[in-house]
Image 1 (tube, rainbow, N blue to C red):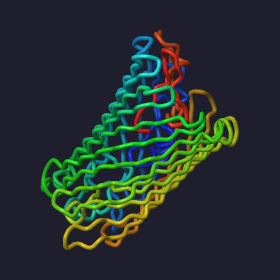
Image 2 (cartoon, rainbow, N blue to C red):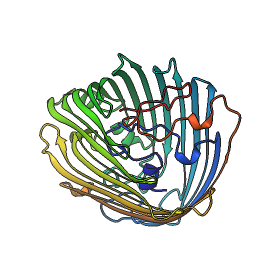
Image 3 (cartoon, rainbow, N blue to C red):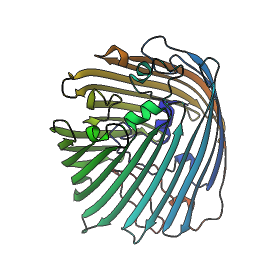
Length: 436
């Protein structure tokens, strides 16, 4: 239902960093079960359903969301997982369509060639008609449209190959391709694109608790429609860093380097690149995560700006109040600067997103939640400013079943971060996914 809750479901270490989530996709409550069916219902109030800078439209939203998840093993060395979710949102006050359907589906296959050489492929597909984080300036850019449509289709494919080079060093080869397809015509002509990212890294174990890392990445951004020859760009990154496992409960990770960005029709640039994150598990089910990143992001206004230079700070907390009540909170702060095209000045822009949730688990099947989210954008351009508040109540019921499986469920992938532990040397390994 909310940005906060969905972020915490997949675990939050590095979730706010630039596309480097590193968690395997089996939540803790799904371990030991092949098939999980769930149904979620919620009621919420949204103060700005279109993300407009002025004349905001507010509405109550009633949501029904069934979901099916499967985790299992094809062989002792091959793990598969898949899911499908439907989200039906009904608005009591919304111009145009009052009932919107959104869909998401995932598929993953991970294979161990040997005890230490693995390949992991993931596909994540979303068709979103009710975006949680609306694009700044879009509602104001379409003033003649009664119902500013920011719906989109997104498909992300990740691949990772990992193999040891020696007793202390490991080679990671990684690739990612993301397709964006916006449904509204003008928005699609401006923002439809493909982002391809490739990486090669080598880590070396200096001590059991300290790992040094050297990495190279290459990114291509291809716009698919209007003005693509003016908007395409590519970047090359070189960085070094390390992972430090201070103790069983604490881990730190850092990458420092440079980005060389080449723009198709604008001035090229060189900038530092930084990723820093840390996690502390202060009890078995309570943790705090924090991080910072400095990078370039794509902008929602490709006519006036090349991209956005971003400082991204985030903190996420989960605290177990009792055995049945869990509180969670999320905060991110992004001071940024829109990089103007020739003749256009650079524009400062600050974004804050925060949220909180209180979750009550009366039984293993039921979860009851109350949540609140606040999004705020301050910009040097008035049409890009936005304020949005969402508050709601949610109930979720899930049913799970353990089916026959080649690999014991207790050896399936867990939410252990890939940066913290290496896969255990067993036939059914704890595969890591994404970018480390």
